[in-house]
Every structure is written in C-alpha cells, then in structure tokens.
Image (cartoon, rainbow, N blue to C red; front, side, top):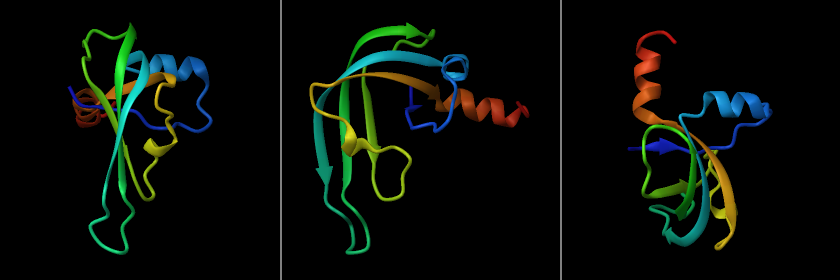
Amino acid sequence: MPAEACFSAGAAPRDLIRDADVIVRVRAVDTSTDQAMSPLDRPVTTVRFLILEQLKGEERLFDLAVRGAGRSTCFADTYQRGGEYLMFLKLLDRRSDSNRHGR
C-alpha cells in the first residue's frame, strides 16, 4: 500500500501519533540515485528501509522506500545507511478517501 513519509515542521508529537495511519521503526538498508533527466533537474535519491517494528496501524507494510529530489519535502538523501528511524506514515489511499468526504 503506498504511503507518504515526509517532514512535518512544527507538529506536536501527540498530533503526529494521532494523524499517522502507520508508525514504524525502520533501518535504512540501501540507497540509489537516478541521474537527472535534464540539466535543470536534480538527481533523485531513493532510500529503502527494513521495517524492524510496526507500532501502529492495521495495514502490514513489508517494503518501504522514500524518494526525494529538488524542492521535495522528503529529503531522502539525509538518511544514513544503517541508521534507525521512527516514521509516521499517512496511507495515500486513506488520505484520498478522507479528502473526498470533506474530512
């Protein structure tokens, strides 16, 4: 299931926990960088994570990757290989459904 893991500036911890569909503890295991498509683009970095523990959510995630480039709010190139992170994720399908129903 697609999920989004992006930086949320100024969010209180209780809000992050409440608003997340899934919370996972992960380890960065692999990175790859795609070349820019044009001289005006930046290369796109993708980081793959091993899910060590799922702390919240009905949906079971087995694979997680974060891509980031340019002015994206996801800074994939800041994750350190071997580093462990706590991620608060919004499932994209649920967010789309909620937006349709005015929530």
